Image (cartoon, rainbow, N blue to C red):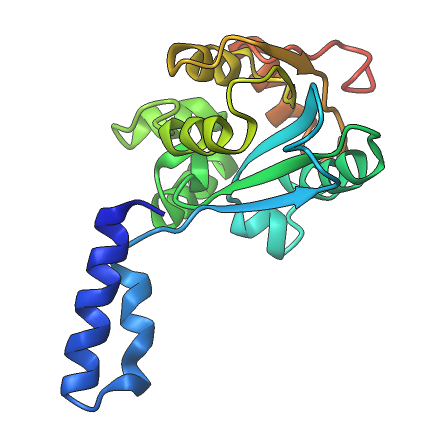
Length: 206
């Protein structure tokens, strides 16, 4: 967590304590997003650990939506990292919902997709960027835990690799991570393929 976030948490906690309002401690969650890291095995001592930087997806990760492949990717990443001899880590990026547009806007894009827009057109229809995610915190965490060592990244998205490269992480090997493909999300995944994700027709069952 950033020092500024910790300072804000301490300030809010002090204010609640002074007003005997500790039952309202949930207010802390309204002003910050906390990214989490799960270490599996001993990646700090290993070379070329396996890593997943996973963007939060409430609809997929928690509610099991089949409109995307996020939930299966999350579970598969945990299983693959846990089984890897080098160990690794999963970094869970909160605040990345809908490629960074937030849950409310994402819900609106679902309605637009039901009307015929693809996932990127829906963002543009709302005047929002295709992808506004910031991987700066992920880069900081990777530097802290791995200390500049090479690692393998579970992703189909070369932009994620490029973004981390630009943030000072140059020794990344991309590892394909295809799972959760079904009838409900084939068009969605096909659109991601057209946008640049490294997916093959065989990956989409076509």
